Amino acid sequence: MSHELYVYYRVPVREAEALQLAVTEMQDRLRRENPGLQARLLRRTDQAAASDTWMETYAVPPSANADGVSAPLRANIEQYAAAWRHLCEGPRHTEVFDACA
Image 1 (tube, rainbow, N blue to C red):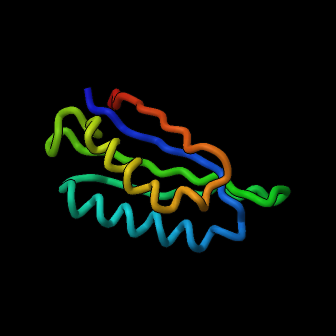
Image 2 (image 1 turned 90 degrees about the vertical axis):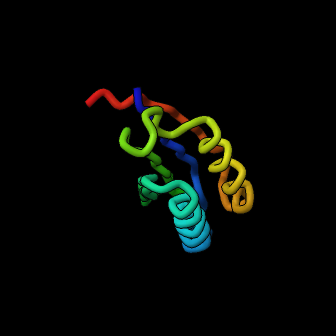
Image 3 (image 1 turned 60 degrees about the vertical axis):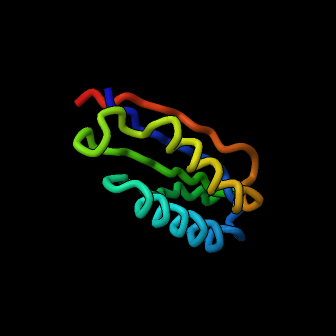
């Protein structure tokens, strides 16, 4: 079964530009280090709040790795994210889903 990773967290609006740059650079690095990795960055804007919800998604097609996003890759993601963790408001929440179709 192929695992996919979803990581979400809150970021103050004032940090949005810095966060987007940091995550984009991190995901580019991860793609170079892990051929086949599919990584996205999503943002849900909350007009009534001073912070937005951001989500990183990671998937690896079975042709590149039958297990999908492996435990070592998840550890690398968290290690690299530590460099810009100060931009977040509260914890990063990580969810692992199994691809069914």
